[in-house]
Image (cartoon, rainbow, N blue to C red):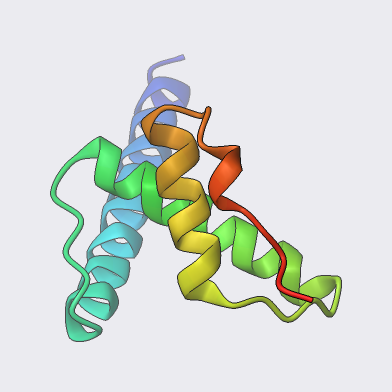
Length: 89
């Protein structure tokens, strides 16, 4: 029984160590890109942005990132500014 407990603890420590190493490696990659994620909000924002971009690429959609970003900012700010969106013919 003691061996099983020791084995479980060793596996747990190894798993936690691996996870920490992966997070540190990802943080180094992001820092090299100029991205520093200091808070949970930063991390969540980055993950959501990456997920949106991956979905757009998967669907072969080309979008103007500046316009997409502005639309998201406006919607998050008050959500009622749809009158600014006019298509020029």
